[in-house]
Length: 425
Image (cartoon, rainbow, N blue to C red):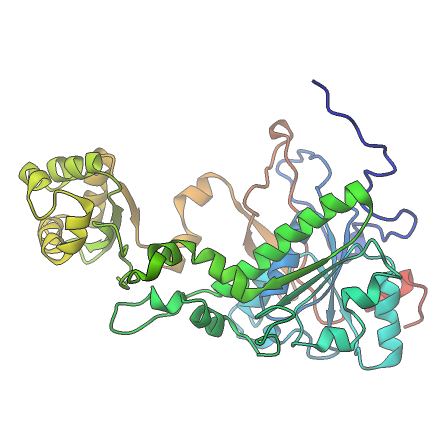
C-alpha cells in the first residue's frame, strides 16, 4: 500500500530565500570521504544553527548537528570565548573538552550587552533554523531570546533551552554543574565502593542533556517539515540524568533498598566485573545466565562441581556469596596471564573485555580495523578524531560522510558572517 505524499510546500525544512549557504569552503569545513568515494548529501545540509553555548551540554549537542551537516554558528564572548577553552592545555595547548565538542563550527564573537552586537544576533536569527542556549538561568530571557519573545517574528524557529533543572519549578534558578546533577539524580548512590561514593569519570549529566537536546531538535525539524511551525524545547540536565537512572529507580520500587555500590562490579549480577590475572592485569567478564555459569565453571575454572554448589547455584546466591566466589575465581586466574584468561573466556563463549586505559583506546585494534579514525584541523594543527558513530564511508552503503571541520578560534568567522548579513565589521 502506498502512503499518501504530502505537498512539497509542506515538506520543507525551513523558510526559502533567507538561507545561508550550508557549507562555505573558506571556513575550512569538509565532509569526510574515503578514497574519493562520494556520498549522499548530509542529512542536515542546509540547516543553520545558532548557539549561545558554553561548557559541554550545548556544545556536545550542536557538534552532533554539525556532524550531520548543519551549519553551526557558535556565539562567544569577545576575547575569551567559551570558558571551556581554558579548562586545560592537553591538546598541544588547546583544551581537551573544547577540541572534542567544537569541531565544524564557526565562531562569532559578540558582546550581547552591546546594542549593535545584539542587533547582529537578532538579524542572524532571521536566517536561522535552530537556536540553542545553555547560558546561566534567566540570561537568555533577559536578552530577549526566549521562544515567547521570538515566536511571533520567527514562527518557524526552533528554540532549545538547556539548563540544570528546567525553566520552571523551585530549582529553576539554581546553578548546576555535572557533579551536582549526578548527586541530585542519585548517581552517586550507585557508584563507588560502598565506603565512599564516586562520580562517573566523564561529564555524564552534560552528555545526557546534550544528547536529549540533539534528538529533540531532530524531532522538531521533522515536525516542522510537516506543519512549518517551530517550537520550544526545554531540556533539563536533572531530568536527562534521572531518565538514565531508570534501572536503579525501578530496582527500588515500593521503597525497596537500593543497589549496593560495587565499584566496577555489577551490583545485582555476579560474577560481572574485573578480576586480576597472574600478570597483574585485570580482565572484565560477565555471566548473564545459568547456561553461561555452567560453561564458566567447566571450561574456564575447570571446576564443574561449582555449577551446582549450593552457594552459587543461582545469580541471587552468587551475588550474596560474591566474596567467596571471587576468591575462587582469582585463585584460578592467578596462574594465568590476562591474555590466557581472555582466551579461556572466549573458548567458553563468556563475554569479556580488556580493562583499557586511554592509551589502550587510542590504539584499539577494533577501531583501527574499522578505519574509524580521521583528522580535524585546529589552530595548532591537525589532531586525530573519531568518526561519528553511524556515519559511513562508501557510496554502496547508502550513507553520508560526516562533516569533520575545523575547531575555530574566538571570533574567527566574524568578518565572513557579518559580510553575509550586510554589516560592516
